[in-house]
Length: 316
Image 1: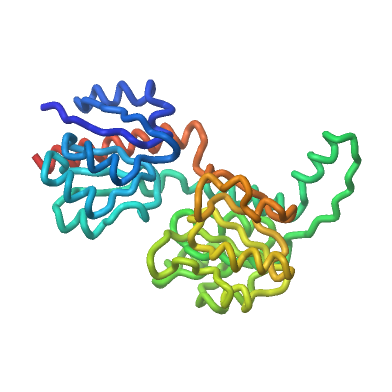
Image 2: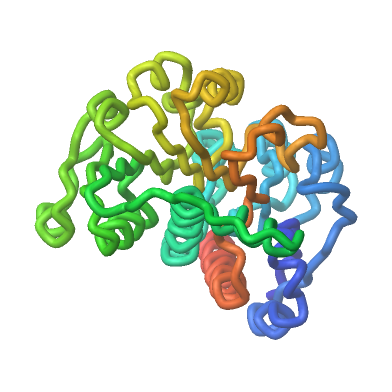
């Protein structure tokens, strides 16, 4: 039996030739829509979703309205390529009997690596030295040593654990905030202390955001949180932009409460051309690209295809 599958994941579409053999092996009839920007709109999805048995999705808004429209037709399964699930109404999918998953665990090393990349840029200003050298200058940037500094990791899941392991190699003390109790073996291995969020804000010299986005932690880093932090704290966000209230961050940068930031993600993406964050030379700006390596993209695509095929077999 063949399955009609909608593919909207941009990384998957960028490697469609690799994916094609896997589509054929699973007997997928794949449809690729025209996507302007980063994702389809809710209205565009509602127009076509009922035609498909399954979806390999990117950042598209799979709202209750979209899922209900799809369920009235053929839709039985949805796999979100990647980790974040904030664009999917998971409760609606469960209520409607639509099988859903992301692709957990596929980017642990890649996102942790890029978090460390931001850390080193903030500490040593390598990007500034490079820019100066290209302009014929010989900049002697006075950086900061990492040994003895306190790294606080918000969200000690798969990615957060890898960040902890990496910063420990620099001689940094590590503390982490996670809602549930962490595995004692991991704590013993890394020496990380599990603390409450407010203690992390008050104690950390550098705060890494590695948690998922949900209604409870929207704008987790707001004016109140920044007020608790050490003067000159560094902020590194490799999770979701809306974890940070950007207006509060701008104020914290202006007054020096936040000394530097490495931001791979933003509330609105791509980052608007005239966004005020662009004014701060102590801010390193990314492009929501933490997971994007050749190997990781192929790995995630294979996992997503296998998951969708299994869900479709189980629901028909």
